[in-house]
Length: 268
Ligand code: DGL
Image (tube, rainbow, N blue to C red; front, side, top):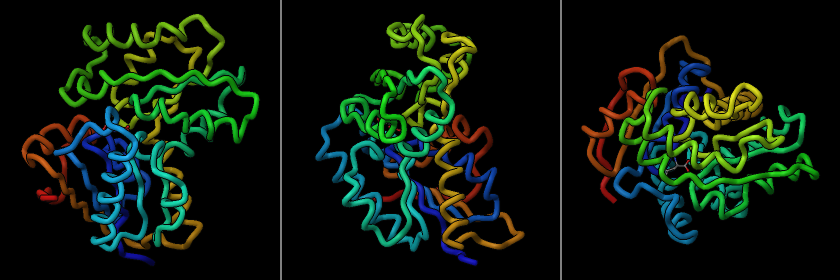
């Protein structure tokens, strides 16, 4: 029985796709979320800056005595060196390995696609993780930087023509190929998975990084005997480095429900 909260962070709102799944599968767990909304996006920045920001985010969560750290951000997961994350005092997971494992389990053709931010695709981290499991896999990465502001601004409805047009353009290189599995490798992207799915058709399985990461985190906590054995609904505390109001308003898009729990401002 471990009452300490699970720590989750992202550059902004995208990591809430992991929180949404965690609340479903571990409803009694306490969660502390940090969204670095004052410095989003991370995905267009250089590697050193992303690493520096990620380390600060992790220290913030550690300050809140978390029992586990989840980098609910494709960009951080792809760029943060393993030498750093594997030496944290708490169990750690990013989104890359859980998503790569799920994709490898699903693909039949061995051709897997990855949608991510520019920094994520540049890092090649998903390809590396996939080829560790399936050495002969063909991996096609596509940087989709415009998806982040579209999602953050609520351009998410299945019939949204702007997002659909952008998605059609990004997905052009993989339409009509033997690719059968596509990782939504940025935690913002599961929000528009219907639009992506409509364009690619049923033949392409979509891997939701939020869903896979929450499941991996739950399995890790269970293995380490660190789950909270309680009947009470968990406490949720959210911290952001920019406007509380904007975060609270937009969080509904990601959580599919009104935010419950406290939202506080963190000044760097
Ligand atoms: N949620 C971030 C990710 O998963 C994307 C947003 C950003 O560029 O900071 O990569």
